[in-house]
Length: 297
Image 1: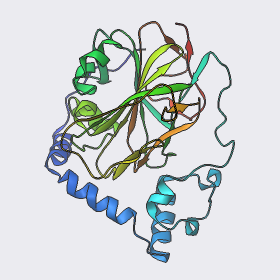
Image 2 (image 1 turned 120 degrees about the vertical axis):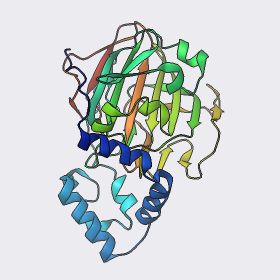
Image 3 (image 1 turned 180 degrees about the vertical axis):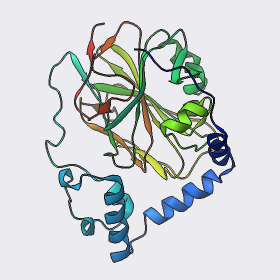
């Protein structure tokens, strides 16, 4: 796939980028989180209705299609969909897309380098909180980065059957992760707050990462609930048993987490394990449950 060469930002764009460095990210995020949890009745319903109109949210596919059905903005934002709104591809050799959104980038991991956007790369080690043992599993593998815009369904699902091995909470910055900033802020995904989930699958290890952003008030998983807030100041690692009552085993298409306001999902696959579908390119619109890749390893 051919990509445009990197172009230096204009003066106006430089000012926009500088503003994001100066914004009080954590304060804004905490305020957004507080506001999103308020039960203000008609005011909340008006905000939801205005938001849905501005971003062209398809409420018709949600379990609750009326803005007045939601007590808080967060409840609306992580709205579940109607049954079968996202059919899961049933081919046992196929992986399915984890989220609604748009492909930011995808392709090969060159040694330990991933493409963030034209002109910017970042390393497996920095993305994976300097866990060198984990990073080694994905050198020369494949990755896909999916951006979830404000209009999208914000629950994240499993590409395949898998067993959770490890979860790592990584504190960090809270830059916006929209495509413009992804092109202009170096190491964006490796700098932002994130939750790294390592799974064992039939084709080997897989990582699925929830990346935080400005006003992404919280991230959650189905096995641990809300991960943040509170926000730890250090990297926190949780280990999980593969068998027994406490084992976390998830099925293909099953929900694994959610964002309270939008962000990005990154998937990592080992070398020779999967082959992405040909229709997927930078900018491709994604729908959870559709084909992501086929298993080749």
